[in-house]
Amino acid sequence: MTLLVLDSPELIAKAAVASGFNAAGETIESSRPYPMKFHYGFNKHVLDSADKAVVRQHAAYLRQHPAICVRVNGHSDNFGEEDYNCFLSRLRTNAVVKLLVKEGIAESRLLVASWGSDRPLATPDDRAANRRVELEYLTREMATAL
Image 1 (cartoon, rainbow, N blue to C red):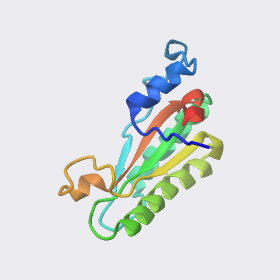
Image 2: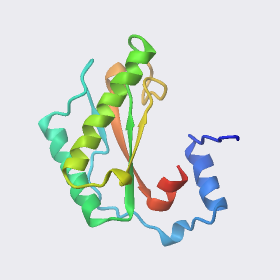
Image 3: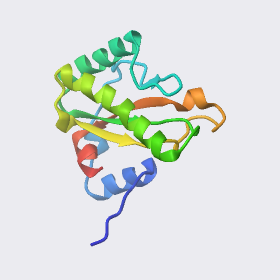
Image 4: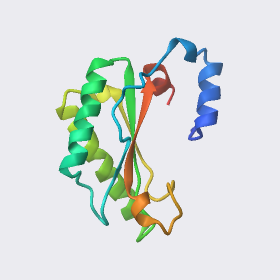
């Protein structure tokens, strides 16, 4: 059996269209909360109170829009061993996911991806910008395709 993993947004979009996905019929409202990125201090994985408030706003939005799923992408900087960076990015995603579940969002609507330091937002030297969790809104069809 061959397994194809698509991590390129362009390839994912092409695969979705090829499978019959109609983007015109699916809209994700523009009133969703911001920010979509939450940054962490060095070696930290706990959200501060302001970030928790924003995650709760995302949960309220998701409760109002049951057709939307979220992929929670965890990242770390490139300082230290990559195994630990992957572990730390998982801790960061888990903190966000636990809060969303606590706020009433079904786990089936949440996808989790922990990238370690593989996908920097900025240059690898800008470590503070790379220590983050990003929320990515998806339709159910797109989440199923992933």
